[in-house]
Structure formats: structure tokens, C-alpha cells
Amino acid sequence: MINTATLEQIVNEYNRECRRSDREPSYIGLGTALGISGQTIRHIVRGIYKEDKPYTNKPHPTRCIDNQDFNIIRALFTEQ
Image 1 (cartoon, rainbow, N blue to C red):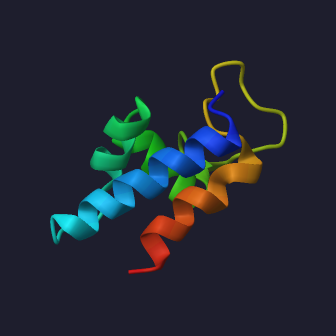
Image 2: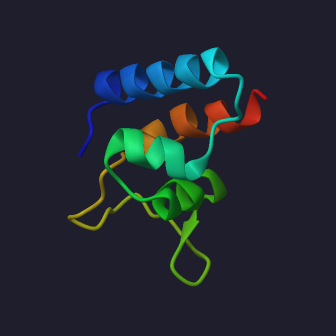
């Protein structure tokens, strides 16, 4: 799982790069920066996964972002 400090650093760096390049952040771009899929980012922003099931507090062993950190990713796409 990506720890909170690392996640914040990568999201902030990605956001700065987007601003420097005068482009909007994308799920695919952030996913690439984090080493996960753009689809995973989309699911985190929406708060659901596979067949519109909400994330639970009991994560699957392969979960890479803690529920408590979803707000870090969501903020990137809501501050536009």
C-alpha cells in the first residue's frame, strides 16, 4: 500500500507538472505517476469498484490506496 506521505508527494508533483504544462489532470496520468491503472483512480474518485460496489473498510490484500487517503486523490479532480 502506498503510504500517505508518498501519495501526497506524488499527487502534488503530478499536479504541478500538469499546471506547468497547462493541462488538466487525468486518471490515466495520475495512475501512471502512481504505478496503478487509470481505472483504479476513476474508481477511487467515484468511491466504487467492480459493478458499482462501494469500497469497504476491510480492503482486499492488493489494495494500493488506503480509504483514508482517497480524499487526496479526489481533491486533485475537484479543485479544477
